[in-house]
Length: 173
Image (cartoon, rainbow, N blue to C red; front, side):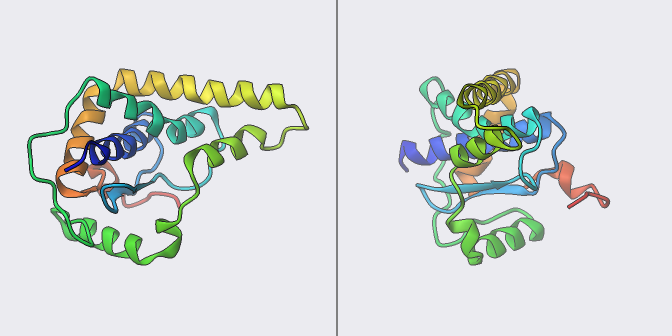
């Protein structure tokens, strides 16, 4: 498959691992095809750590320069496969849901967070966005092995479900 699939897998893995690192609830991630994917970490960003989770996708894509995709034949088809019923259910529901296939770009989410509850002050917005990008780069660097591990699963199967999330019965929406 294309290197673009690997970049998308790394991107979504960046969100997954950053969410795990900052303690955010993680639902999962899917590759919808070789050009797009989605990760769900629950809710809009409120803190710098939350915004870093949003920015971590782009930071993780940079790993493609130094790390080749796994030497496997990726799963292809209209729906990703998963190794458990929860993963298959997530993939089916996400792909049927119009919002999931037309999600807002990360940079738009990040820009909205940077401006949130702030008077008109572009310098402050830029500072907040840069802070989130810097924190995301730090999270990806500190958890590089985990990002690569999750990306390999996404690349090969198209679905990643956080086992940590599956074991929490009391997650907050």
